[in-house]
Length: 262
Ligand SMILES: [Zn+2]
Image (cartoon, rainbow, N blue to C red; front, side, top):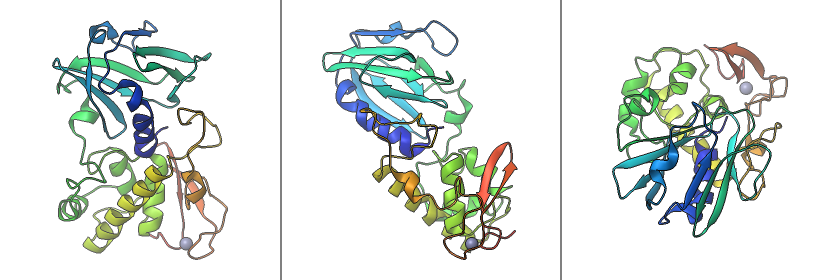
């Protein structure tokens, strides 16, 4: 599933086609994954931002178009067999493809996230100044199991299964650790910023299923820097112990049993 780095890469790639442009047409499948998107036809996009794993387009009118890529959603410059939404502006046409159909597009009144609890309760962006060490230390001092809590998006936005496993390995914290010490939270804070920053630079991670790609179809490159995710059975790069995988809160979880002890 695309996480912050993949969504941010996607946002940057579609920006030249959408930002400052009037939407000439927007064609989409008619089902529950899409609200009626015709409300934004003829309107100019004045801001194209990202919050966690959501792309948000804002207009002169008080409306927001919110796009969640789901498991396999992404944009291409050519129409394909899994194209679900087609957006046309004077700068060109972008096609939203989504083979597994978990992506969602919604037009809502600006800032009204009551029906979107994840967005409503979302923590700060990890690379922004709003993500403050002292707040994070305080929050994590009373956290339940650290991995599920990070996945909730409440302490910090944008991390999913890959980047949580990566950050916890770097910080040497077990996925089920609770009530982190100041030292653990400080390591985790810096690990999150470092991992997310490098992953954004690399254009995100393209997994073996190949569903995430950049606009031109090229992959991201951060998968080559993974040290924990999908590396079960391989030697830990810090201590040589084989990494392990188990299921935690229905998510495949990768960690080093020696460096990341409970
Ligand atoms: Zn290790």
